[in-house]
Amino acid sequence: MPIIGDRQSTSRRTLARCCTWLFLLFCTATAPAADKPQRIVSINVCTDQLLLTLVERERIVSLSHLTADPYSSWVGSEADGLYSNRGTAEEVIALDPDLVVAAPFGFQPTVAILERLGYSVVKLPMATSLDDISANLLALADAVGERERADALIAEFAAEIEHQTYRDAGPRPLFVSYEADGWMTGSDSLVADVARTAGFEPLGERLGFSGGRRVSLEELLLLEPHLIDLGHPWNEPPALVSETMRHPAMRALLERTTLIEVPDPLWICGSVRTLEALAILRRARDDLGPVQGDLRE
Amino acid sequence: MSDRPRFFLLLAALAVITTVLFASSVVVGAAGTGVSGLLAMVDEGDTQVLSLIIWEIRLPRAILGLTIGSTLGLAGATLQGYLRNPIAEPGVIGVSTAAALGGVIAIYTGLSLAFPLALPLMAIGGALVAVLLLQALAGAGSVLTLILAGVAISSLCGALMSLALNLSDNPFASLEIVFWLLGSITDRSMTHVWLATPFIFTGWLLLATSARALDALSLGEEAALSLGVDLKRVRFLVVSGTAISVGACTAVSGVIGFVGLVVPHLLRPLVGHQPSRLLPASALAGGILLLSADLLVRTIDTPTELKLGVVTALIGGPFFLFLILRLKSMYGV
Image (cartoon, rainbow over all chains, first blue to last red; front, side):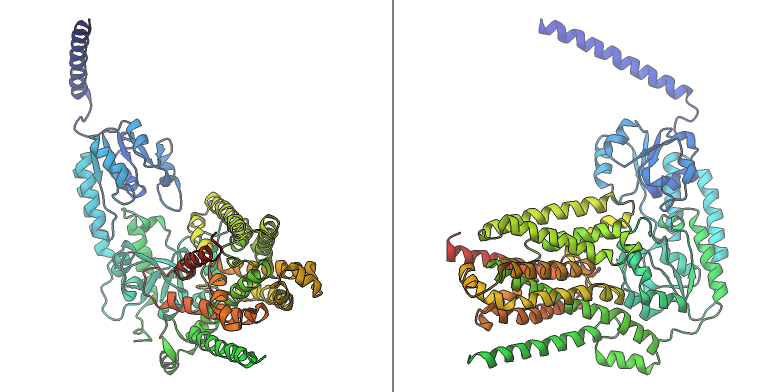
């Protein structure tokens, strides 16, 4: 008895396999651009933005949940109607993607599972310079089959950077993006690269650290930057974080220096819109004019 | 009373060390360390920045370090004397965590924005509930009951605090759990000093008033009664004094543990095991311990400044274990 049963199930399996192959052949023949992935899932807020710049919305199945947050991303209503994922493997698998776009930071376990299960995953590192943005666009373009579109975009991008690059010699004014709670990024960050290109010396470079860290009010006060961007204050709902900005020493510093506002989403992630942050800083650089060498040097 | 001069000598020595550390706390920092660094800045005509740094950043930090350390030392000594329990300490028995929970509620509901005094008052309220609860649960109980009750209160308040912070829509709130659980006095301002010190001093006064009664209590409750000690009054002094001073401290610095545990134990042999003498000595030494810990966190070069509670726990944790071992050999607990 068991032998007959086995034979039956084997032939059934063969039949099922044949049908699958036929179905797949049929799909390849009729699909508009079969070589291009059509069910793309992005699980990181930064890769969401790159994906939207290169690929039609119809080919995207899902973007990360942070994309809907106006303080983290500029995507806004473009993500409406797309499934919003939290970057877990279970969700991604349920979406049945043919390409997963991920950033290697924070999602290693998810990426590892997906790769083990045979999903095609493209990993884009965090952009820490303007050049990285082009590199990421190119890498993604190859994965989604949009090389031509990317080449055109990158040429435009490079030309704009060229146009906004500050070239006058002389002492560079100090710039800091002093985020809520005193957090700032170091010399190897996108913010620092944008500031350098716009003609500033980033404070992270002066302090000589990489990555990100909390910089105390005392350190900030001592270096007295020429230009400060405070980022989103995170005052609402109330938390300790807003107390740094209410500190009397901070208020005194703000009276002595120039304040600008660069919307956080423009440079939290490197995207084509990072150029807008560059333009804001470049305008601020032109407004400052030539500066004296640092008082304390 | 031949040891009287020795006691005053001890107090004088502690006072001198406290003064030196307080002064160092104003002089040492990211901006040119030491007096020469400060004078160099004066030479460069940068007095405005210098005075901002000294008056608005370092002075409040030094004042808070001293008063908070003193409060924890004093409260630890008082609680140990009053409960006649060697492990009583605001951090270990959950009073600080309960105070932090009060502070968290005041800040994250926006109450303290509308009414700044709500911050210390809510923290004091939290501390008061914890002290009363402890007394009810383990007032005259064994060492073990007090520890267990303290662990329960501390875990519960810590969990409620984390819950409240995780529920906040502000993404930074969940990061601030670290501040509340490990404590810090970095970048606090004079506003915090004015908010906390009136309560802290009131608490000190209440605790100091209980000193004489603690001496009598060290002979046991019945002996104290026969010596004319009003037990209800002592209870009021210790409970309200601890809640008010520790509550106000925690409201501005978060939970800083172990200071009140370590300090009285180290000093007890030096003051002849007399509670009334232990109080002022512990207050001074508590200030010394916290000022040194704070100097350490700002001079050690870590990518992100260490929290004060990390340093005090590194000292206090092993000390606590040592204490348990000693209790075990003494009482066979």
